[in-house]
Image (cartoon, rainbow, N blue to C red; front, side, top):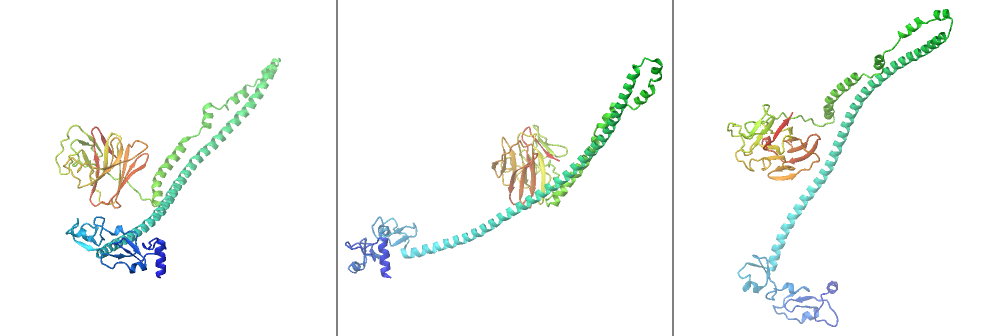
Length: 450
């Protein structure tokens, strides 16, 4: 064993300082002498206390105080520095509480063990969360695949119904085409027959006209034949009618079919397990409207007024130019659309019933506090919550906005209407009653769409 240790130290390059001619692995290192010694030289080395022996090392300077050049024996608990005895007595650490290196080592190891235990626990928790996230990612992919299948099936059903309606309409066109063709063929046949008869009569009259005998001509004049042929004459209007297609039954088939289709689309949507969402009957609360907001008689639109409306003071009324809905949302799903085409600037969304009303500042401005979630347009389209704004990009100007509130699931989604496009979704946890909320800028108006 000693031979293996000696060989290892030799391979590591820690050799006896005094074995000059033949390299010999060191057994100990003297901190005081800063020399390493083999077994033989160690026997003759000084045994006094100041000659401290340690395991062979080449880093002797690291074990000595750089200020007093003495062996480091203590650790200052105040500063966390490794110091020598002179540092304790006359140095910068005089009067500080110190621990012997061995005791400091045990404390540090105990501290490291606590850190290690905490990190191990955190690692286990992280591993558990990672496994859950990986599982959820698989679930998301599986769920998305299922939804895609249902969407594909829904549009397949829709396509089948539209194709059936198309078949009924084109069948009526084909039926009329066949009837018109039959009528036209009959008329053509009549005219071709008449053509042949006229040709024969013309030739007969020409022949008679060339006869010089008066009796032959007078006796053979075909007055009655000409008269009878004229009675079978077909008018232009009759011919045009025979060649026309009556679009009225085709239009009726399409009208009734599309009406039935419009009603069945929602049924098909339900069959494919997509939830139905009806528009919420939303109205504005005049008791919350700022004095410069005019509400329409049906409480569906709000416009800015330069003149005060002299509304009676109520606890609910805003000092800022805002208005809330009379509707209070505490559960369920709700959807409404707002026409913003008559507003060069607008802010709309939802706000807690507890939002500040009497202070015209961030506490009450929707989108500028943690009690409201909004979308806005002011030179650019964006969303705002708790005074944190984010920009939203869109290819076309937003003329109307759809808002979907799922209170129980904690979602507020904003959509561009026509074309329908998802713009942004907030995810949170609702605990307080909510209202639809609107900020009305000068020379602007907003309208809730039926």
